[in-house]
Image (cartoon, rainbow, N blue to C red; front, top):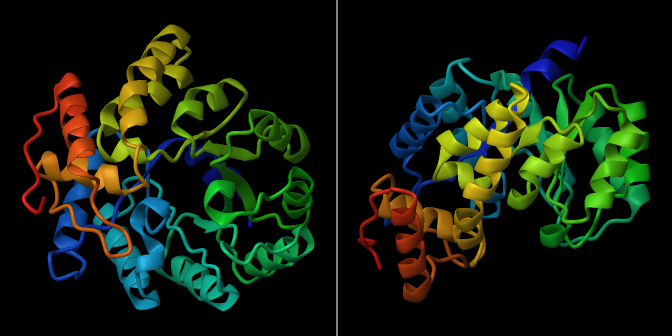
Length: 307
């Protein structure tokens, strides 16, 4: 399969949409479709679900598949769809990645397995087996702060060489030297996405393809506009938007993602801001700070109904 066409489409702001729950803990698929429509109406370039922002570890395998199917049907081909299909369990990862291919997703985002802390040799075998099991493009998701293991550049470079369908990586990695080495070793056409909000613009500057930013759940238009400005060659506008987004980025990560994002969306009237335990909404003190920050951005923000 020739992956050049899909690589040319996987650009810009790919929003990692949260999974909305009802008070009884069930998934609110109607609200999820509404959130996706909100994203598309505001210029988002792609949609991802069941990544970190989607609380995948709080979902059953069947629920993850249902979220993928509902999202794919809602998007209906309007933008690329890149669901998260990784798990700490190898067989689950295979199942979910094959499901993404089956339903017609444009690519699958596969996280470095968390908790287990596999060696680089084991990570290579895991990702190669997953990539070999499907033809769908794979974007590896490296987030050492959550997984307790960093996928080394050498390992990623070998995977990109040996697996034609491993087309990119989402780096939620604060080591900017590391992410520079990714493009040096994997090739300048390798898709590099930022998962660190304050590095979304800097990664574009070194040749990145875009970002997968939780902040885009709340302010999708501005995040998308920053990418549009960069790709249009308007560097000053892209820089200006980068700094404009900084205060919102900061407040949305003062508690574990996606708790502040869900609180913000609740204040905006987009969802009922429920998380499944062991996650929960932020403290009242942080809720107040989130509300005040949203208002600075001109976003009407009320109090939470379940606070």
